[in-house]
Length: 519
Image 1 (cartoon, helix red, strand yellow):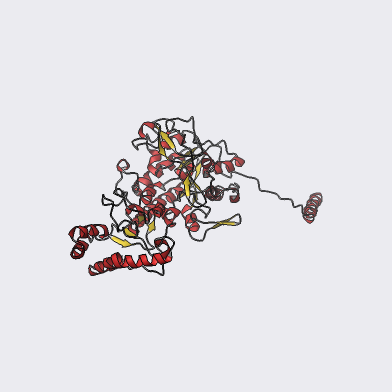
Image 2: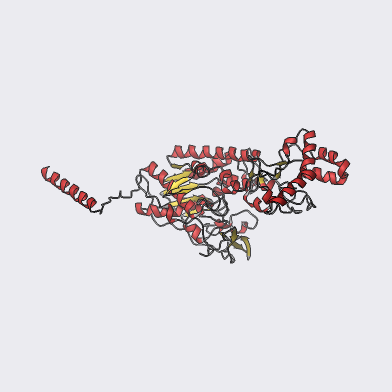
């Protein structure tokens, strides 16, 4: 005992001596898998798992996908090789039968996102030799992961199969789940469900809410998945993945309406400077003219019909909201036509009635979609006006003299539909995660924080602000390289907590915010 004490004292004095000489001995905790086994890791999911970024899938983006980062950290705790079905280039985009079916990635040229130069070289019909550990499939919804034929090249052109999965599916009739289970994974990650509402959201709500319809074969690409269908698919995924006692980590879903795609463009961008093309005096004169010739008469007529709150006169002192069409409003086309006929004539009055029957000014409860930024002030066409014709002057400026259409804006009723579905999906995810004893990542809480206070990591703050917030890429939906690293760290925290592993997190500062034009 005395001998052991002497040795302990000697070690202590040696450590103090090192400290006094500014040569500190740091003893790092060894990396351990805990009760998990990372020998064979497979990742299932959608574009987030695949590493999609800046509007495309490309090699460098794939390398930085959160499953790939996880696999790198797993290696120190016994993790094995992790393979990814890489694209053919860093341009992005896809070819099918010689035709481009998905375009290049974006980069920031100093003032705006633009497409990189070059043509896609990744051919959908060129099969890759697997199996692959990263089974993330851009565009996949929950039920797609259990759908036979989702990787059939012959079905891609008709929209019956996924072009990304078609490149590496083990057969034309296989499923993503089957390709995962065939590898006998010891550990898995699953983050799926975002696309079950995302298409509806990014389309401005022109899809269909399929709640109550349990037949996915009848769904369109922009439809909201029935929560029962989601629960069935999700349970099938987890039940099969855990059948051989594999452990795993799952994540819930944030509200897609908190993504930069829906929060970047303000509902009220029409200042005197904007309306005057940079000249405030011209903007003030424009507002006076608009109030006299359009907003004033509309306000008077709508007030007479008990809907005066839809339109207010434009202000010269504060920024004004854009005009939008709200299909949830009672249609007052006939009433407006009758009111305007004495002054405009029957034909013109009918046109004004058709245009403004469900028009109102946007409010803070509306979400203007990111692409709408370029539509505001632009001339409507026969294709996008909603009338089948290109409206003449003065009704030829979207958001100013002509209402933005359904594809441009999410209105409160549509936002509510997305929220209800997402909440239902999250209940299913948490329930089966708890039942199977899986690690759980609260991705919703992370996104809520990014979109409000931000998240501090490695001496800087990440937010959901478009371009410069550090978290999201230029498409406004998918993470940046640093955003993927943040996600990986959240997964590591959940895994360490659940399985008593000691995986190391990555340094966020080592991951870039934006990809350059050339890679």
